[in-house]
Length: 158
Image 1 (cartoon, rainbow, N blue to C red):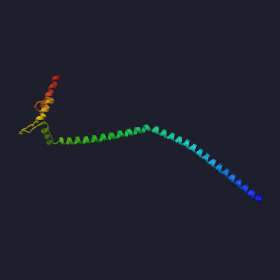
Image 2 (image 1 turned 90 degrees about the vertical axis):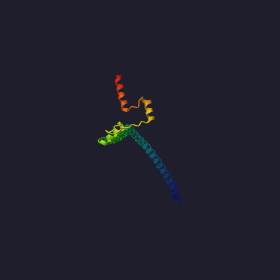
Image 3 (image 1 turned 180 degrees about the vertical axis):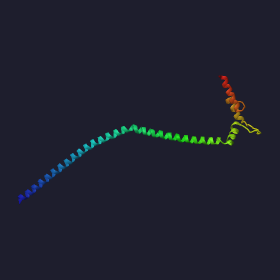
Image 4 (image 1 turned 120 degrees about the horizontal axis):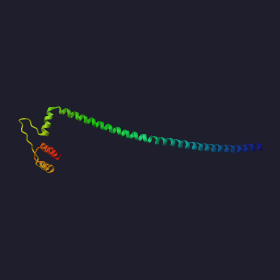
């Protein structure tokens, strides 16, 4: 029996030793696998980073052009809207100019015209007239006289 106990003990010690060796081998294999995975992942990561950088470099100029063109398109749309508004204003003005009463009002306000039988009066602001005289050398004459004098002076210069 002693022999059997020695065998059991020997087999237990042997089993423990074998179990330790097997565990050590597993740990060593798992560490080598991790290192192998790390090296593969590092290579893969480097390749992926290279591909991403290449894509960024390849797409940088077209994206810059795209953004620039989008800004140009927005600017052109804004200009187009402004032009449409101006066209509408001009159409309104054209429609108003078709009205005889509007034309008469403009003639009275800007050209100081009067209808036959009416008496026209011009009120001159003394301060404004003095300023105009000193700035332009104009007298108390109507504006159209000053215009004709300017045309005559231009004729004499030639």
